[in-house]
Image 1: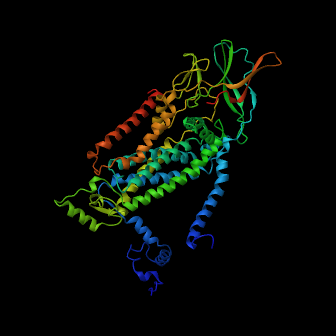
Image 2: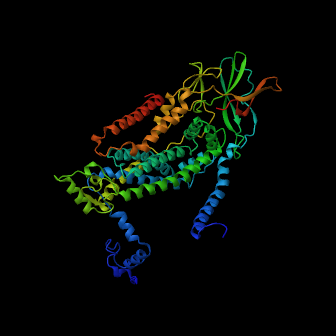
Length: 168
Length: 408
């Protein structure tokens, strides 16, 4: 034959290998696709109003924890999850901090005795502006993407989106 | 021409001379029929009557005890699946139901938790015993390496299992643990996203972790256990230096005599003659198996009692909107958690992956690092001193962690 000198045995060996490879490849394509799909799944942006009423009464210089029911925006449908929004007024600016630590994502709280945000896990500290000032956190406290709107009662309300300003 | 195969198995006497008939009386013929088709008697014989070192048998019970506790984990895990629902909205409720409505439901959960704790300690002691007796030396390098991989797999089982109840402890474990890979260079964020199913911990985090804990890791675990046991039987149990002392003034002759009289699986292929055959051996069954069973029984009783009196905790349901919850790692992750405190901002990735990676690599590579042919611990200070320094550091880190988290 013009095919060269492929013996019967070589044909069987190579054919078995090729077919086994084809079976593996056929199974791998959908499996790997399913495994990796979160990488390109988009998060639907959803805005919610921060609970607890208007933010006009929140005092200057005292971060105040409010709750917002934040939808995940990805994955199978699940109820919105309550999350903390640390509404903070400081030197004329408004911050809407998320209380997720930038180190290991534990639950940060405002510690009045230190006048700092403190993380209970590994002792991370943040200033009132969110700047990381102590412990292992590699970056500042992130804020929720947020906006303020004036309600029908003339008071200011805070809305947040279901994503953070900076990836942590 | 080939001889005719005997049609009636009992004509072959006592089952090819392997063992006395396991069952006398009317079932003897049925057993003989079954044995003829399956070769089960030979298999049982191989499983039970292999030679093991005579001295030090109590120290060599730890591996089989580990296997027994792993079986306890599989057994109780299957029963937990009768109630558990891997869903962020239902997981916690299903365990609450298990606790309040099912007879002994919480006891089963307690056994699974205390089984995990016991397993962790047991693997540690088993590895330590193997290390001190230098059982990992030629030709048993892969016994050690498969054992280290089993240890890592069990750690992974523990961490994925801790994420499933979806109470506060479990939720915050999921948050912190799935966040660790994001410190990997380049692929870090991708790995975290794949595990979580998105940027935040959510429903896909639970189902993916569930799949790991219930199928992926157990399948790997079973495969590796099979390999570990196969290698044990292939090379025979090493024991320790006490099994290889020579007592006559002509050691060479004594060793040659040992090799001549060796019973399977000895002499160990590829071993230097001194360590090829223990000076005295007994059959695995009943001598060693009795000791194994005593230790397993004590451990299973301990697990049952701890499960009954202490049980498995269930915190409040997962709540990301907390300001007061203090996430604390399980005790066996305290050393790693304490490392996280020490590594400053710029070195987190280094601390998490390079330091831990070096530790893991050193453990895996031990048989190739320690090339000293001596087996007696006194004559191996070059590995024992660094190893005890390493173990001491791990314990010290754990103590610092306890001190930091619980203010003792």
